[in-house]
Length: 307
Length: 317
Image 1: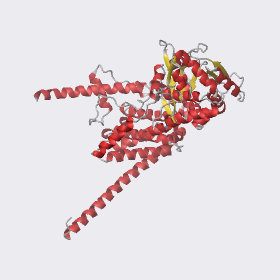
Image 2 (image 1 turned 90 degrees about the vertical axis):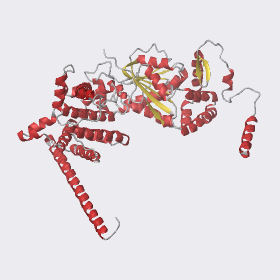
Image 3 (image 1 turned 90 degrees about the horizontal axis):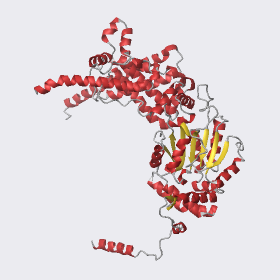
Image 4 (image 1 turned 180 degrees about the vertical axis):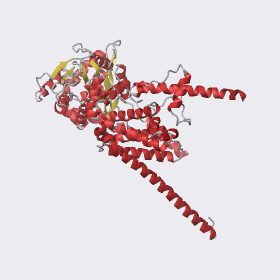
């Protein structure tokens, strides 16, 4: 027993170190793909040869995540772009640059293929054609959002902006969710005018399952990045609520012509208020039903019913 | 108990009563071919429908089949597939989307784009696919540069295609040319010179399919696409049973009545049966060096036909 007790703290630290360095290496591997799109990729973390700075770096980066995840940190997450081969990724990431001008179209894909050194005919590599472009856009933006939080220190920056009184407290989970939804919507600004095409592609019958899977992945990412730790049915209802708010805000955004998306931000604000109001009402309703139920049972018992 | 043994006895005797013909087995349709035994033992054999023939002989036999069906090719295809083959071919061409819709840019290497695609249509004698691709490039993508070379091993099929090209706007232009060649060996076509290589309902008849795939890999530019539509294996067993019944009963009969040539159509259905499954053929494409997009094939009408695609990888210098 004493032997074990002696070993324990050591091994835990070793695991923490291994985990953090593996995470970093893996994240870099992902960033190397669409690296042209990631400005934060240059902030490379410390080399794994110096163990202590690596630990310190990650602990300062994610101050909120002090609870430990159930999955092994030694094994990499499936990354958003894992299903594409190198050639497909090359064409798709080159095509992303053409979306603002050509939309989510075959033309953008063709130009992307040409930029990557392929022929016009090489877009045959993507069996889902335009929808592949939409999926790749969604997945890469999701990766960017994650990078912003984990490496860009998004929450720390926002807390600092709020002034000295907000600095010590940090953001609550609810605030973080709101920040992340708005941040994710902000990543779509460049393609705002083309987004209806993408929504149309996603709503085609054959594409709906993959689109919903991607929406769920986004809601899941937002909540886990915000540090949500709900373990009961709230796990489902929160993901559902975030997904619904995000998806409806996307539609609103396609018609939002205000600078820096003020209208969309107001819409998101209202939807979160609605959600809170709904939660309150449901809680109230539950209390009401519970109270009258208890009263009825008590009344019955006082009349001699065997309840 | 007694009833069961009685039943078994009945069954047994029923089996025993089977008539044993004194003559050797003679299939109605393949009897003549079965009698023609291959001469030399040491020569490499390949299959011609269900029978085996020496490799040197398959080419001429397939040639004979297609020479005899060239004239009635389209009418027979319509009857055998109930017209569905036109839908397949349209879908095939639409999914390939031939022709450059976007003008070439300065930054593109000149030999890559600028001036449409170079398409090689193998075994496309009657021009079914070639005319569709040229129409698509012209009318959909407004590309007047894309050109198609129709290559076929059979002169009769090519003559049929030439005759049909008279009715198209591409007759006698530089956008359409005909070559009589064996797809397994095409020394007249330079390496890395073709954007799109198509073979539709043809590769089934090749003597050495892998050699043809390797040759396709050679002539394609890096990034070029190999696209093939071919009869394949039906995945639903119930539908398969109906399909087989149609294939082996109806098609040779239609061939006999309409084209007056039962043997050729018997060969056709047998060669369909012998062609590798979707997965096997995809692996053959991969063996030749192609990259496979997604699953690698697309089934049409429950797997009666399948579209296979492969992309030649770009080697980074």
